[in-house]
Length: 280
Ligand SMILES: [Zn+2]
View 1: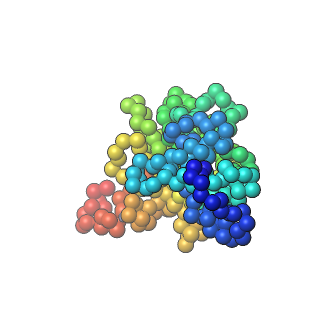
View 2 (view 1 turned 90 degrees about the vertical axis):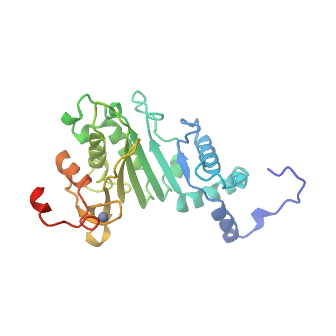
View 3 (view 1 turned 30 degrees about the vertical axis):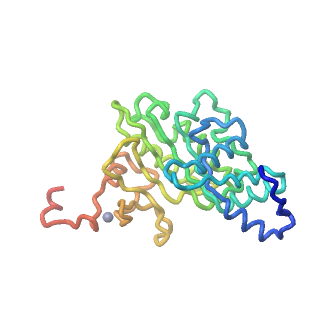
């Protein structure tokens, strides 16, 4: 990488702790797939694309790229050490969207990440950008969440995240004039909230900490789900200002109950006025 004739620095003769400190400074979260290269041809491409994307992040135009991150390309040992640090301390942003979801390619992996890397990831955030077509049925009202093929594929891949201790989900619904996004949110919530527990078809692998719901357009703001550690990790609904608005209904929850909690008014943000309870 050095174009100038600077004297080479004996990086590899540094003690491991010092090398780790250097890696720590270079860490950047990575995204799969990268918007720039929707379908990485290999895990290395995916990694490069992710780094490039974070280095050229449009939301942070003042942030200088970190060309030194290419350090992990130097040799196998440095690659292994850097990846180890990245897996332990970085966040892997995993996305499923119409760009990388192909219903015909059922046997293909959704994310092109080497299995050795995948199982060492500690922190991941999953975003499912869902169109009505991705639910794979004609009428979502007659669909059981357990019959959603794509969700089953994603659950299986997530179960391979053996070291993951922090996992969040954002269910993003792409607007559709014929469909209420509620169905996408409902089926996403039902499909994933129990992964990693005996209630799921994937009882091994990571559990989710938090589920948020969003639209591709402006929305008034939905409540979100998060596990309440003070209450045995029970799924609990919170308003956008993080006030507890009530317990989740569990695996047998109906879409009507789900909707009720998604839009339940927060009593802290909007204290009940006299007579309002009767109006509801
Ligand atoms: Zn509130």
